[in-house]
Image (tube, rainbow, N blue to C red; front, top):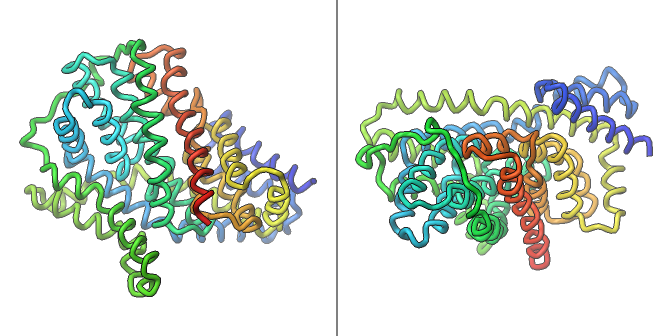
Length: 436
């Protein structure tokens, strides 16, 4: 009982430091890990080594994938490919199906772009389409933002799902395939269907957020934009399906199907199709990469800190005990993982922090119950998006960009995120009935 109480105290300390004290996340994780180790009776001489090992083990398998994913997404954004995808889909589907076009745009653009980048990039497009069509801004923009959020929380190579894949020893390709199965129906409900209830909310966006339209001739082609943005998903998906259908090919294809190789190949293609082929020099393209790496550094530090806390829980022996205690509860393991992430999300606000923090708690649960680790990544991802409120930076971004009251922000943004988390876990549980 004391061990469980010590873990709760450590997580509570982490919450207070980040949410109230505004302590930098890595420092908060390290201090919480030290406090947990002392309360759990670890010899003081072993605590620094355990934290350093946890940081190294988790980052070692992730740092290149996440960093290359960041520079890939940055190139998609800076080249204008994301905007070309949006414009093309709206033209293909027509004004009558604009909500569907916005839904697909959000999801496709959200696959390579991190949420904040995708949000800022797509906001001017949303407001320009509002001016052209006369549709309510919130109702028009919500499907796109739901697509960005779902991709961010559920699907590799985004930081939280990628870290979860490593923590619970899941397979990134299978997680991506299962994630698409869960994400698409969730998106349809939380995106265009939910948006029909928001038509009476009136936005008052500031003129500064509307942006200037970029001439079409300055944007890359539609095929190059869409094919390049989807390349990592297509490569991972196809190679995973091939190895599942023909297990004998798993070893020969192991190199190509590695997430690290997939992201490097995808970035190399993007450098050519969206950079060099459009007259940009290699130095100009690499300048974009430098900026992306600066932006991703804080997320890597969060993941590093979570790895240190996870290792302390493992070496102290409390992980095995916690796993056994959780496994004995009369609740499906996937639902428990979702609940843990939901509680952390409500307390800390950040979906990324919620996902990687939950990893240290649910990893022993996966081992104890032998539940499908790929589905656990998705269950935790769904929980990490639940109940966005005033401690979430995305909540305030949405409120300020759209010029909404707090009431309307809760009614639209917070409810959309809660629908994503709720229907996400529902579809994960349904999928678990068919997947061993």
